[in-house]
Amino acid sequence: MFISEAQVEVRYAETDAMQVVYHGQYVVWFEIGRTQLIKDLGFHYADMERAGFVSPVTDIQLSYKRPFRYGERALVRTWIQSHTGIRTTYGYEIVNEAGDVCVIGSSVHTVVDKETFRPVKFKKAFPEWHEVYEKEKKEK
Image 1: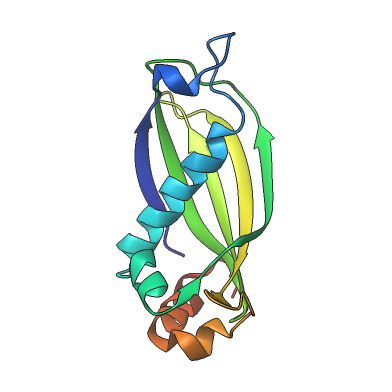
Image 2 (image 1 turned 120 degrees about the horizontal axis):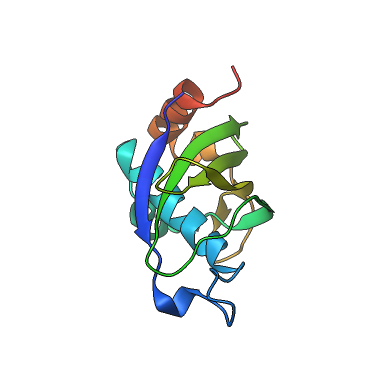
């Protein structure tokens, strides 16, 4: 199982009135991690869009363990939790500079036709990508 890593420096605009990272920002960090994972595996989400497909989120889960504050650095770790050829679940862990786990979560995605929004089989539309996901997923 491959785990990708992406660093994020907490910006002031990402914090709330308590100077803690606003909870919705972690979804953006998940996207940063997911994009980096896809790139690390040799693919680009933009290529999927150019081919006429998108991969919307169908479910997302977050669990907060510790807060982040302005000026801190976060490390977003991302992996393929499961992959069925139709749905992909990405796992996430966001840790602080001390190595403490601050946020854990997952997001579920499917691939759909950009125009019709009808689901397509990932393994049929992107066979090379599917093969890599099969190799790298956590569940075997």
